[in-house]
Length: 249
Image 1: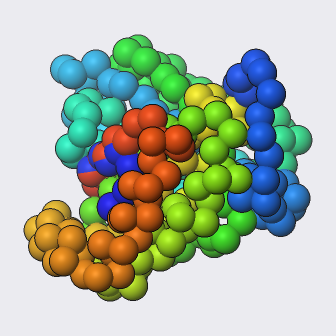
Image 2: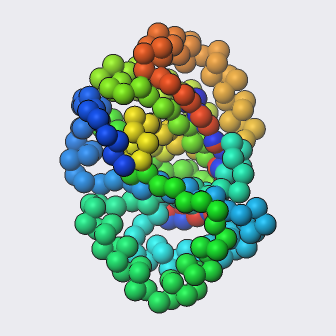
Image 3: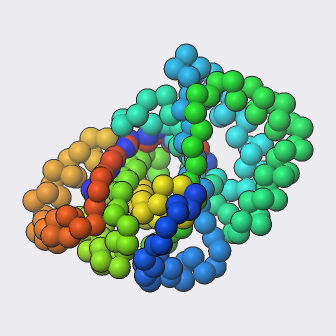
């Protein structure tokens, strides 16, 4: 798969930078015009509090999802330690503001979860992202593991690398060993960043599938096309493996 990767175990449930940016249909297509966006949150938990954090979150996540839907909530299995990663869907920034205001006065949420959870954290990070115009949010066929691959692009890249990136993603989909959940690009946070979220049945099937894919002519061709533009478009890739705590999709 492309970009940087991280493997996470999840709970299945269901700033904009300064300076000019080059815009293109890849970044400003119809999926942005409807206002729907996705907030990516990453929490780094104190090592000795990870077990308590997961138990507390599993027990009380319903208090948070009562206010807005979560796409998924995962823990990092490979590519990072003592971290959780979650994606929240909003129809507009006005909706997010209203949700945050409601949570601030939700006594049950504050007392049963937030006040107990915050002392367990070492760090919190978030990004605002949109689905790329050619991608719809997918659903996992069943429980499994997830792979988050992150690409740091050079400024102004979408107009140049959009089509080759889509071709590379499509080539991996056609191999059949993995399922695409979504391709997201950042609006707030670290700019020029693209996240690709994949579902796999288990870590071994993912490994076997990747070995097979490297010999697939479609993937090889797409990889060569990617390499041909990488010196002008890509700066860094990372990958994470996730295990789900809750996923709602």
